[in-house]
Structures are given as C-alpha cells and as structure tokens.
View 1 (cartoon, rainbow, N blue to C red):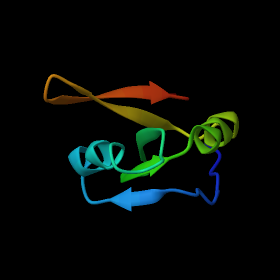
View 2: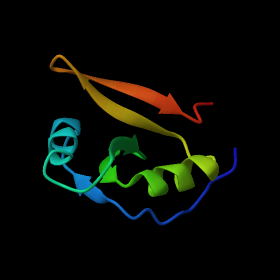
View 3: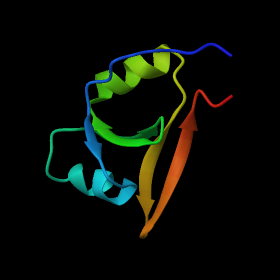
View 4: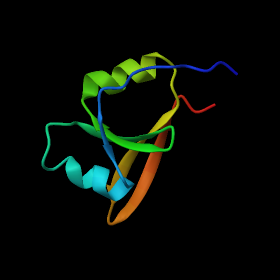
Length: 74
C-alpha cells in the first residue's frame, strides 16, 4: 500500500455533525471525513484530493442521520 502526503486546504471540526452544520454558515461546499478528521472545504479541493487517489468520504445528513459516501475506497 502506498502512503500519500498531501496538504488539504480545509476547516477541521470536532465532529461530523459540526462539520455539516458549518456548511450553512461558511462558503465551503462539502463536509468530508479523511484520515479520521472531519473537514469542510471547497469543491476544487475535493476534486484535487479525489484525483490524488486519497481515500475519503462525503458526510451527508439524511433526516438527522449522518451517512458517509466513500470515494477512492479500496
């Protein structure tokens, strides 16, 4: 398995719930989980880490239940 080191321009949050809530008051486009960190970030940044092959998951709120949508899942 190959390790990647990448700098991600994002805001870190203590929980998935807080990351999702932050989307309402920020200019960020997505909440994600990457490397056990909850982040909010712009679309361009998400596209950059996806293209780099980094594993992450989108965080979404479905009627009060937080769900994840994996990207680059191995």
